[in-house]
View 1 (tube, rainbow, N blue to C red):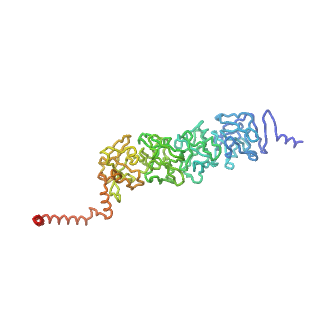
View 2: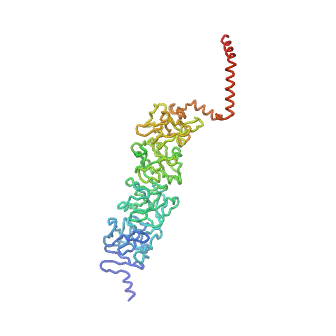
View 3: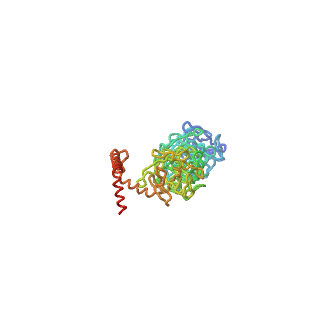
Length: 555
């Protein structure tokens, strides 16, 4: 009789409209008339969701949005938070994100931000969180409606449309927010409910293919710890229903999946012009973040990879790039990097971000190591103090080059201190631009350096009155493919004149036979002897020469 009574109590008890159901677990789980979901403070995990009694609530990363995939034995170990009425949000919790889903057995389960909520049967007392990280799929729930992981794992996953992107341990897509600043999240309130931050209670861990040195943690205003990669705070999107979804891509043109280099991957990357307070009109992305070129690159070839590409993340696109106002669409292109990603180019130059730029408009990478520069509308570098140097070309002799060794040219149809090359001409022959006064290296007549203002307000370097240009088809430093183009484009000598084909032939001949130095003592002796012999002939042989000449005339 006692045994039968105990079984009856353990099956169903109806008291004051509340149903209490056992699952063979030590504790009882209630289907409440009006379940309270509150924010509790946990000593290890910070702010997390619990019920009104302080019992910890969990989410299951194998669930889908508004769908529970935990039943049978799973539900015995992880009893769902069942409810018979509307759930009630405690203080600090967004009630609009509390909803109810119908389980396969017809019962109603509370959900927050699309995540079905559960208990863990081995949490005997309020405040316990023994279910945390179980199977790497069970986690406590943040007030933003996402998981809080103990040591959040960030790994590379292959997304069917977007390629290699950052994901969490469960394969859920991570995003960056372009209005964020470096290591600062500007997404809070309703934004953080739509885009729950990737939270961790310990140090994050890098999966294969990711640089662990680029993983970091920032403290949000509420005290929670958000994972960053390459300075970008990482987020989920609440409308991603299951692992592998990327429904947040390109949302409002400010949310993007994250590349292995720690920068955005855009679907159709937009390149546009924006006026920079110090540098004039330069290329930026859709969000206004500065684009750079790398002078050791070759035409349509990136030579920046590994650690370089983490410091200078390439501008990646998943489709054809788009030209904004003032950008020549015909000069936009795409190259395939070694890892298979697609990098945007302009006028043959691969484009990059700089990871130290904290916000749109920053240009902290300008002039970095004399190889990184912002990009002009003509598809060439804009230097702060352009350095003009001389270099010996095996075919052309000594000629003018920029600081990276790239050939400089003059245009014979220009007038002194006036450029007659604009539009398509300036795309093929990008002007050598400088922000401040140009500088000259040793061996250059510095007094011949100057500058002119172009129609767009940019400052072009001149030498001996001739505006100086690059040639877009020079693939790398040392190339001089623009020489004698159309018989109007020429390399420039240190004296400021055009190096003509005849000069080129002479230079080639000189390259075959080394010309002795004027300071060589043996050369000086020969020169002195020749001068003495000439003087003797003039003094003593003049009469003979004159007589012979007279004799020839009489003949």
